Length: 200
Image 1 (cartoon, rainbow, N blue to C red):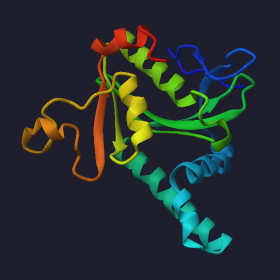
Image 2 (cartoon, rainbow, N blue to C red):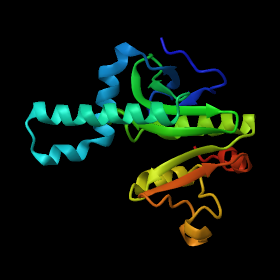
Image 3 (cartoon, rainbow, N blue to C red):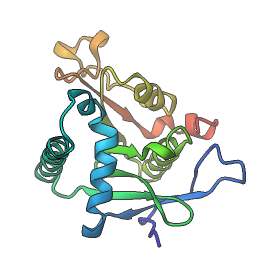
Image 4 (tube, one colour):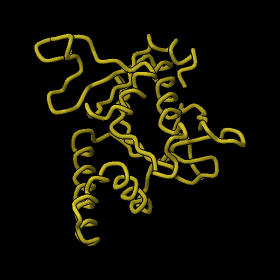
């Protein structure tokens, strides 16, 4: 059974005909490793399939990338926690990495299993995290690949913006540009009216 993290508000998953099931988060554990690898592969390694590798070689490449990502997050944000996003019946539908500190709530990664996409899962999770941040009076921050247009549109629809003066040499035209292909975006408590106005 999924255990909601403290302060995490009830989520609703959009697009279900028989009423919106609830979503919750629970910390990932060792037995979840195979599922987490699958979520990572579907969300971050789809292009590897175009390489035409044998299944064993492809699996090895994906596994190497997965372990590198896990090590990177653990080293850079040692207090970060990986959660499984669970449906109303407790079955996992995705995962997310969160680094919750007194000064900010950073979303390191959020991914949804292929069969559960386009149903509002990521939007519901992010909306709830933003509400949680509003209550705590701190921002939610994340970075997104510049060319990931659907994700950027989702974040902006929820009130995420680039920090002013964060571009190269303070260039406002490049606000949020981290110089490595990623954009830094943030949701600040002042954006709360956008959530209450129905951004979900």
